[in-house]
Image (cartoon, rainbow, N blue to C red; front, top):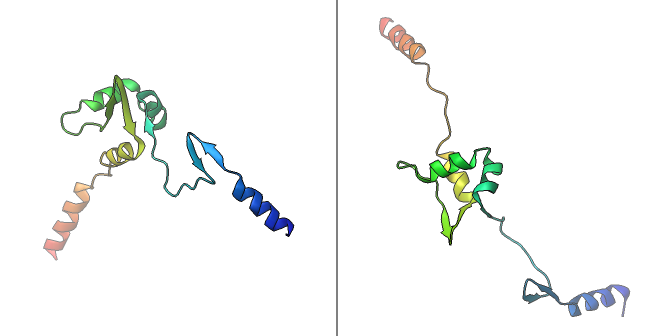
Length: 107
């Protein structure tokens, strides 16, 4: 038996206990999507906890959240999607558009 075979055999026999799950190895194939507490989300988003609480009750577009007991949790991916709907786009220069249209009419 070669040294490589001996290491592979030892690795195959070595079984680890990971958070109550018995397995040879753990493979994570998905990006992690954690839940944030309001305090953690405030640090992530640069918004205050008070502002986040206000956004939870926004009648038009409330911040999605989960209530587990008395604990509010917000999933990172859902916050990011919600935040994308609030993206500010630069407004059109109305004067420039009107002037271009008027120039086009006079030609």
